[in-house]
Image (cartoon, rainbow, N blue to C red; front, side):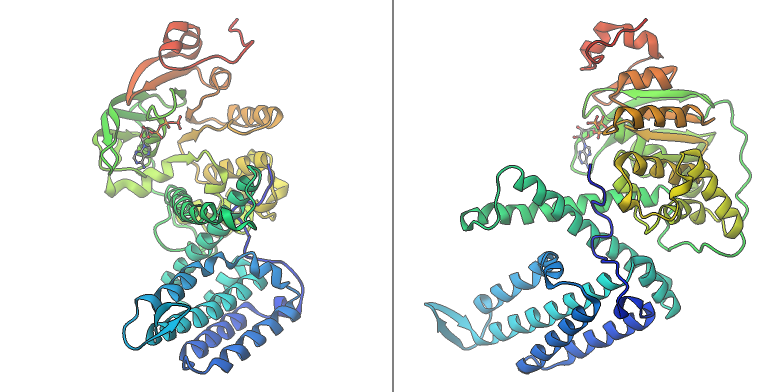
Length: 480
Ligand SMILES: Nc1ncnc2c1ncn2[C@@H]1O[C@H](COP(=O)(O)OP(=O)(O)OP(=O)(O)O)[C@@H](O)[C@H]1O
């Protein structure tokens, strides 16, 4: 798997004079430039030409080729759409242009949006290209930007990366299926592609947000320095690490995914959650740390009910490792990503550093702390994603298909890491040998209910049960 999808696509590292400018200076300059552009009268056509030349001069100094910006031109789409639509729907005097009655006022309004929007996008792209994301945030902090704006900027940055990353991924997928965007007759396919791009980006953005929420994100970027707030005393469990009773849930579109799930897990148990596609496994897992709420039934973590009042504490206790590490990793370096959760939970300074180091060491990634998740292999990213959750020191570790897309060696190494952890563990998997290796107990879910619960070996030996729920041992695999 190629690295880097969805990460860092807006930044082009370099050591040009533009790259070396202090980030706060660049932010102020970009902001001033955008204000200036917005204030320019729309009829001052020459001024927009001058702005464009000035931006291109910055590109030349920064040694960022025009091609690089062209590849990111997709962000322009909304402005172009408006510029085309406004002359057609605008009011006032109309003139005939190639047989189409075009509104003069609409055309000017379209031009205004297109010119100012384009220059605004180019200024922002230039800033993003020449400034690493964490420098941008640092620059904003130095300018004493209110933290809510920094938060918004963090998410916007991540969202922009998600869109561009998703576009690159889809482009590769389309081209590999014989699509060539240079041919005009494939314009329809390209347009449909852009539509599904925005939907997919939205979905991915939402998953990234869920991963942030499950690591204690509450809307502000956590401080990393200072003194730690001591975590609340842990309630000594009642002998039950996790209790789920009669959990039923329907998604907002009305689709009922869970129909009364019952599950009790003792501290230290390792439980595999098995079941066919669409059985409701992920939906169940999302309930365990309150990422999905609003269903009926009861969920308790070490005796603590999962409800709004306890959410922060619940999220500290239940760590969820998502299926796709790209949804979990969003900071510029592996170390910052691992620090994000514990910092949200109040850890600071030396204590935070120690926690981050031990989490990275636990997954064998101690030497990679300063690397961008962008430059790691799929297996390494999976490990860093696990470290981001381990660093929160959860009592219950929930893993969604940990072995998916891993090469055999990385799969085995991850198993060794997981076996070395002394935690209550719940693992959603389609990899039955993995369930056997890591979990003594298995729970089979189908159609939103638990249909079997018992020792993994016995469950996997029950060929009728497996067949009834679309589970199958891999070819050549024998239980002995
Ligand atoms: N956001 C959503 N809106 C509506 N329905 C959804 C949503 N997410 C999942 N579902 C539906 O809920 C059911 C359970 O989905 P879930 O993702 O929990 O299954 P799963 O057991 O994890 O499947 P898989 O093994 O394929 O990952 C499926 O029928 C699915 O189509």
